[in-house]
Length: 140
Image (tube, rainbow, N blue to C red):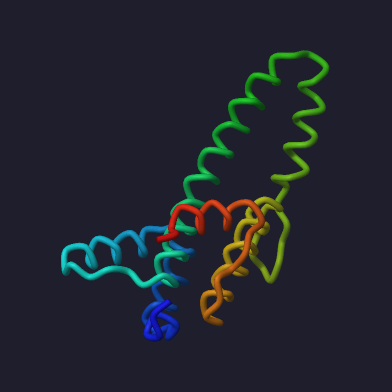
């Protein structure tokens, strides 16, 4: 690896954090600007941008599959009550510092915060299955 590629610039950290909290849009815009200017993304920024985009797509797909499954299970008489109870448990609002969030929302934003803190620290944040996919696809 090149000696210059080990240095992580503050703009890379900022774009990485913004990319996580905007579901990959900030990173995608930065990626398009870099392509227009014919600049390549450095490995650190490329990892975090693609991780945020992959996670946003993954969360979208998983949530839609779960909603479809819950809708289908809602037609089964005795299962409907169980599914409703489980759904209510995960989506029941939790009040924290005057703000109301569901358990699922807190989990997702906790995960994004973990990844963003790793980016601010200049580290490649690790998620067991996702990090391997991103690293494998970004290898050179």
